[in-house]
Length: 616
Picture 1 (cartoon, helix red, strand yellow):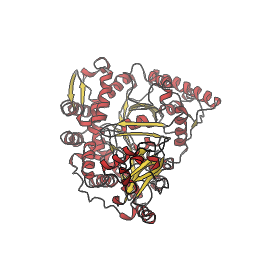
Picture 2 (picture 1 turned 90 degrees about the vertical axis):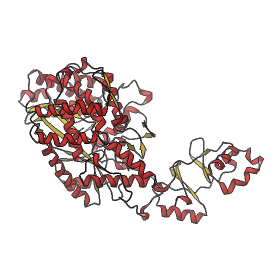
Picture 3 (picture 1 turned 120 degrees about the horizontal axis):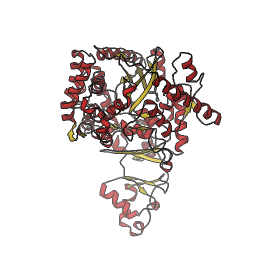
Picture 4 (picture 1 turned 180 degrees about the vertical axis):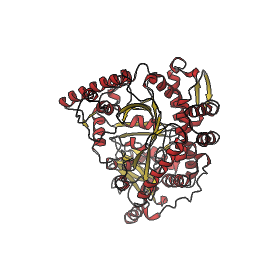
């Protein structure tokens, strides 16, 4: 959603004006298609680089606005959160050494960002999901204070009429409710653009859908969210749910998520595709319009199709069709949105080249792919890749084949043919596609991240392990090692400063709690079996209402009268608590001052953990 000046589509006069502009945009689009006004040659490529900013402790920064202002370059723009920025790279003609040229420009712009970030003791990191993102960084204080983000958040919440539900299950599981779209800001992508011929739109778009699963499997780089191992490319599930307008009680309102792979092969023209989007999804936003698109065409000016583009900007297909105008000439392109940021710019350009090469190298036997492959197989392949990465198996050409074999035997040769057919130099093609080949033979970013995190957790608590993990990722990126050659962390890549440690860095989140009406006998036995010295007690609203300390109740195990009571008769109700952001030194002083050995950790009245003297 590139338009800055937006407002919610609520007033009747706004709706009437917007719909009029939207219908006129579609009429203008059809006119341009019928009169063959779209550019076809030369074919161009482009990309958008989203990246994260971290502070000195490898947590999400809040300095994006300041750094963006100091960068002062039109290639850069803000993103949803205060720890993300985006680079819009200039498009290049698809031939010669365009990929290494794009790579050089990307590195130059990133170096500019690094230079300005360093002034604020910040670091630039390329990763699909920043491992140290946690709930405090997903509050509205971390939303970039631009009107378009606030308005979009309000519009989605208005439609849902409920909190956003987030449930992702992989090796671990997250199940959360949230009151904003900030979880979408966890995702950082390397969005790749390829110009297409409108006359071959349906077949080209369907081919992009068909190849998405195998391409994603080798590019996956986002296995962690809040310290939990989820999907190999967790961004796919996270983005789908973070801006979903379908509250469970309003499921008939919109039958498809605004972030989706689609439900069937595409048929018809470009205008049919956009009409279908207007039918399926309600418009959320509007803006100011100067002239309608048909009037502009009559004046010899190619319209920006402002209303249609705004609508399209709030629908996030993983392969998104985009309209644009350069030098008064319209063009169409497919935007690949499923490729994650990182692990390095070399890896990203290699991912881009693989996708572009396979797009351009489609064999004749795969023309009209919709007649030769079931759409459910293409969609299933995509979600298998998101869940399992390089361990996925795919339905391809009427066979079940693993990702390694499919990529090596079919996709890599296809990519070479496609690139050479467009005049890409052999030196460029061999350099970047060899990165893909090496990765197929070793590991992608997701696999490295998972192995690295598991190794670190053997020696460190999860918050420390995550910070060391991010520090290691930064170190490898700065050395420009491609991920296939990354070694696992040693553990000394970042030394945790003790003076800045907070309760959340040492608290135990897997504590056993009890309800105030539970049997005293059962709770005491549970504490005995598990050798637990402190048990938080919750009321019927699941709010913290008391705590049970073993030294206070161990003698009650011999008292039959006490055992028959509910635990509320034994628990302490005068509580000393702390929040997760409390400094560890302050928590220790509280324990000493109150002669206690544990502190429940709360967010409001909700228990989120416990910290004991042993945790120091």
